Length: 242
Image (cartoon, rainbow, N blue to C red; front, side, top):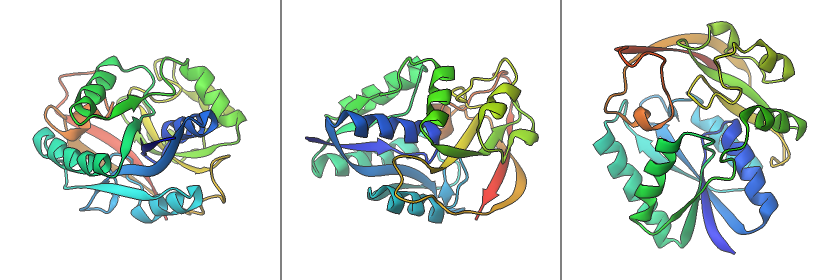
């Protein structure tokens, strides 16, 4: 089987994408690729500590490799670091890159164009599946995930730190995608059929942070969008996990 790596955020979409790829048995998934903020030693955007990411890798039995990013890198810097890592994976024999994207056309095109330059194909196992169906399938399969980041443009802080279950889905406002595909929220998946053992953690405090609007940063390609394109600051609530 051809070697593949998965772009691993630690959240529900990448976990479900990995599950579907493993079920297909068409590719040998041999690497998790994750962007890490080296200043805070946490998963970029999601804010999850590196040690919890490493615990996921150990429980999955899939090696982890990281893109070590500075605080708020610009797109030129981000793409240079990404290309360096992807070219290294290509040299190691990886032919396919897996993503958990669902319906953002511009983001998919961006990924495909960049990977084509190095001869790697992009795979999207969740593509165009109804997001309400996806989240209910995720729960039915036995996955467990906690909301670790909330964009205040879409949700208030009461959603941050909650486990995603049927009640959580019912409580979402009508304008919020059930999978948070527009960047409404991000998650950390700690149990499910792909894990050998659950990831143990303790919930910490809720922390509020503001960031400049990502007109020319790596976040502009991370499906983190706001209803207002005129905003100069984005506000986020994070639930710290230990």
